[in-house]
Amino acid sequence: MSSYLKFERVTWDDSGMHMWGQTTPLVIGEHQFHGKLRQVPLKRLDVLELGLGQSTWRLCDISVSRNGISSRASSRSQKRHHKKFIELHSPPVPDAPTSIWVHRSSRCIFALCAGPVDTADVLVMKADDEEGAKAWIMALAGRLQLNYLNLDEDLLPEYLYLFERLAEDGLRMALPALQVGLEACSYARSEEELVTLITKLGVQLDSTGSINVCQYLRIIAHCEASLAAEDSTSVPRELILGAFRQLDPDGLGFVSANALVYHLQQRGQSPMAEKEIRSFLPKRFIDVDGRINYTPFVDSWLPQLPRVRDAPSHFDDRLRI
Image (cartoon, rainbow, N blue to C red; front, side):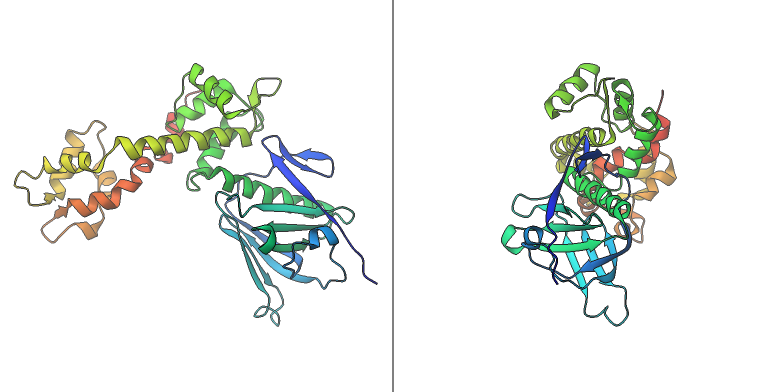
């Protein structure tokens, strides 16, 4: 006898995840995660409205990353025949949304839906119990929220570390602490600028004038995008090439690697150690005579310039509480 299990949509915002009439915090932190769940190999979006019917559950290895969620049968006999990957757009695009659904009566079953309504991919999963399903849903919603913010994944651990250091009980961050955190990330804002930014983004402060981690990351994402936009226009290629040409009076297109190291050590605005300088001089650009072909070197290095300037390894040194 078939049983029909209908689903309802899970929603989330800065305040948390809304499910089963409750609001719980999103799980924000891991780049990727994995585990075992039972899964039904369905591709029909109407299952979210009509239910599963009589379905066969298969134990699967589930892996979630920025790019997507993959499912592979745990049984050796089924691995070749049961593999599935659903792309998680980063950030989500209007015609290919990704949503999470949970069924109304059996709360250990939930579904991930990605893509346009008429061609959506659907992955229906089943945890051992309600708490297990809730943990997975919170983590999936957190992953989707990070994709929406489109943060630099390499810097995410540092952003979260700063939040833990500066937030009260690791949960709520007051505005003075936020100001310190932004300065540590090289996104410094005056008190007035910070209030203007919070108002612009529509961030709602709690009764103590503090923000949670999701609101903090939304502010960081805005600052990150603004800085990238500024850098793309404020550091033109010709300006950097002009600096190299000052070390190439004969116009040969080469500069001595040793001369460049000396120049950065002695005359740079922020003196650098030789080891630090050598670390961003790839050997492929240095010929047998120790010269750098600086045009291809600049073209290779220029896209990384914002990250070089804002290297996260110095966050601890910048914190002054």
